[in-house]
Image 1 (cartoon, rainbow, N blue to C red):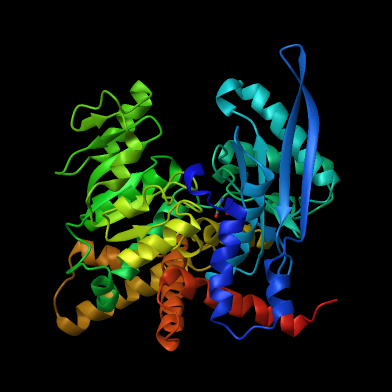
Image 2 (cartoon, rainbow, N blue to C red):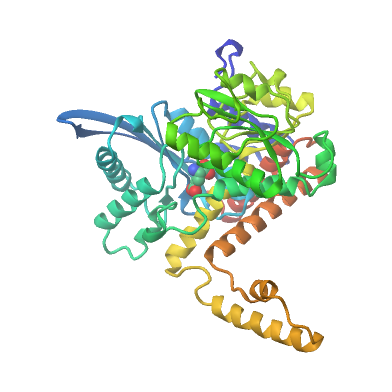
Length: 473
Ligand code: GLU
């Protein structure tokens, strides 16, 4: 956070962006207030005995909205975690779910902890204890509040959470749906790990299907060959960089990590870099790029697309003026502060906002939750049927044309969709439709000039409808 510019907190920044959207809408003041307010915040402190000594941990779970249930959102493990951040992130979840038509309320949790300081067994003990607190206080169940991974957590933590819930609520037939982002063998869904990165890729692809938007960002042509700077090579950054470079021909000209950055204008091989990081625990010695220590400065490097995929408040009033990217895609939550957003807009930089761009994670969480409560994997009923129909079609085609089909074509035509195919197709459809909705909102209102405001207006319209239909009681 850039203290010199006295910028608002993360939570206030999100509210200011929402206010900017509400200002162009005809919305009753009370409804706007109801939508913006955070329904409940739980703070817990609990002791855990670590290496013979008692340590007290602090955690939060904020439920921003319950107009749709369950309320949904990740749990973050970070030493800097705090209530303001959790509330901001919970609010973002409300708007995000509405944008992509995921019928959930918004929630978020965090535990103040540096996971690198604890062993696997200690992390398990702490996570199970935190879960117990959430269950006891009614902040975790398949029908009311469903966590997921976020920074510092992953499949491992989600499996511990699900198992703790199961032990405490053995008669809940839907226990496995109490959390998403689980390992495949514990009720997870194919494609959840890559989902947020995949969603960002689909968002960028959809952007490049709109010639007027490409022009708005002062670019030309297709996605292929565009230069891209990525900040953060965690789960989201890694997947988006990998997919954009390997599948769409984007050149990743810089990767920024917390301890420096790598630059190569010819493009960085993301898979090679990932393997290097795993083997050497850092980017410093990666041979095929230039290492620079001042990572943050690389955000200012000239490029077509800048993708912040790390933490919030990375582009602030202190550096926004120097950003040279034409398009910024917010893969992280809240990487651009409110003040920076205004500066970038004036400069003509186009921003694909977080509440839309990184909604792939919660979208696939929704698919996982449905899979869990319906107790059946996607594709189980229809896959072989589709396969048979495809085979029949190829046979008819061969008969009608008198030409045999190549093995490749026959295989393509007759392959029934498996779970991963269906998840990707559902996610792609979701991201395309949501973008088109946001775009229509912008086209229909001459007072809306940016995608963030358009996204919030689209989202708030849907939430307001649900408040007004049900009524306030
Ligand atoms: N933590 C992710 C997010 O910020 C995913 C939330 C979820 O899947 O519930 O969107």
